[in-house]
Length: 117
Image (cartoon, rainbow, N blue to C red; front, side, top):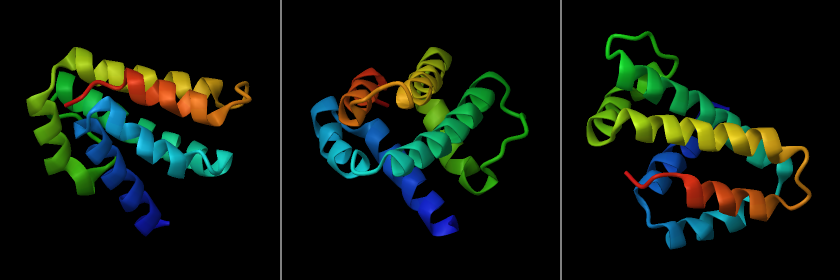
């Protein structure tokens, strides 16, 4: 589970730096399983929450302590509005996960909305 979390977070950080068209390749992998997509989105949501906390309060207590240095670098390169947009995009995707019949479309939309950092 720890290795899976690390892999998902590595993927997420990489996705944030990619061009939108390059993110769609990852959609192929993630759209194979609704449960896998849910786990990824939940993991990313938790990470994005920590990003937002650090963006607005650098001394905030975060959950992903093992990623603190990485998150502080992301926060340094982004604006608070970008970190909020990341969290909101993931939140919307999670909310729509159960009601959407088309997982790939939901993920494509998420990757279009995520700001590039």
